[in-house]
Image 1 (tube, rainbow, N blue to C red):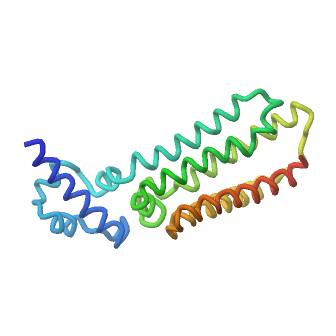
Image 2: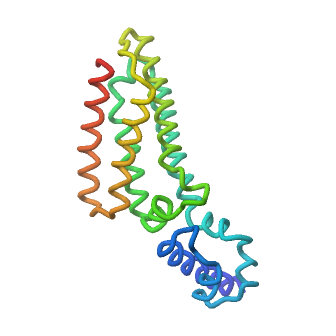
Image 3: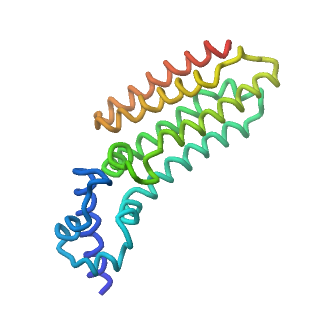
Length: 205
């Protein structure tokens, strides 16, 4: 009985993945998903009570992994002694972004859903949410620099938002376009070198 339930569930999830990738969340049809899966509507509602719940089942844990991994890296960096933070800025960020890239490539279809097909869901704001976390981390770091006597010039809030958004859009472009992983890893290193140098320049470091 358990194996039969798993088989039905897998059919639903597979059909949903196909439908959402082809049409996006808003245009996807539960009727088509049920038909493709070869199950009854009643069987579907035995697992999920809505299209939103079905989309969540496909991407929710991956979305939250990304957010939690990024927050964890921010906490690790903030917990370093203030005088050690400047020397660890690029390494802590680099390890986190590398982990996130590998995770996304291990779950590429799910991240294509999040990044390209999630309008109308709670998952459509991944980049914005990460940007807000990074802005807070940047502001906290600027305070640390001031506390250890390395004050930076005032950086306009709108400029911070633009630069950080641009950085993460660049990162996610590799995933959206399914760049070969070996190239993506190399491009990530170059991207980080570029943005780290830029931030150091405008921070006066």
